[in-house]
Length: 311
View 1: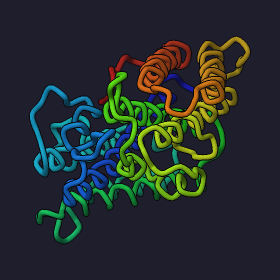
View 2: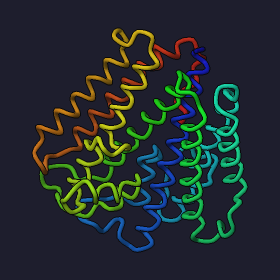
View 3: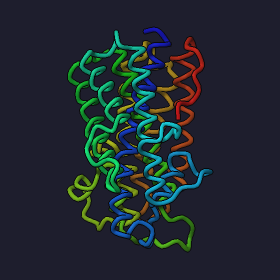
View 4: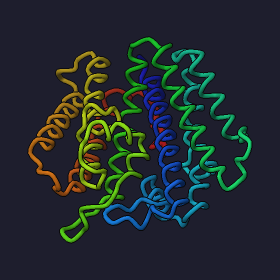
């Protein structure tokens, strides 16, 4: 596959995953702030200001509904749902001969629908939540169409790899921002908002017997391989797609680094006692994912024009 095509597919996956994560997080924060519970919970802090920090906008002002509006339909804010979907649409247009026609139609319709505000009531105070639900449902549709209509070849592997890198990076950012740190930080506190921000509430209730407090939720989102959007599950899937996409996986730097990261996460899951501080592990894992991203660019996209980080 041409490096340019692989590069576009990889970033198409990242932008779709970014839009989906932002939609879930915005909806969770909106509901939490509506109920007045986002910033007053011991052990967890995850309101609109923290969401801006997660998405790389910590240097810009914004709180409450205004911040959430910016993360929904502001085309000038790189982390907004609209900006992410516009980038996805531009990338999908470039690789229309590689993705399926149904997938292109789904991406195009979603981007144009969000830009034009097709749903009634989006201008009302609840419009942010309605737009987030729209994006959440439409991105799920896009991924479903891709899974059912694309060949399981290099194109699909690079699309999936981009989505897996992005969602694991976003989960780690969320945990680093929202979780307590330091010896004197409270270890308790409901973390339902974190589960809702990644769609993992019901999965947690089925897999974990502990109450949804900060530490058990963090362990679940880091180490639970049965939950597809946990960091460990994303890393396992990354290893699979890179092994399939690479002609020489035994000598591939991205494959080897992902394999080591998967082993490290498995060791930490087994070795760390309940209640152990996890923010340091989140930081180290995020740094390793950044190295993997760089390895991917050097090995697979060296022939593509440098496009910079699309955030």
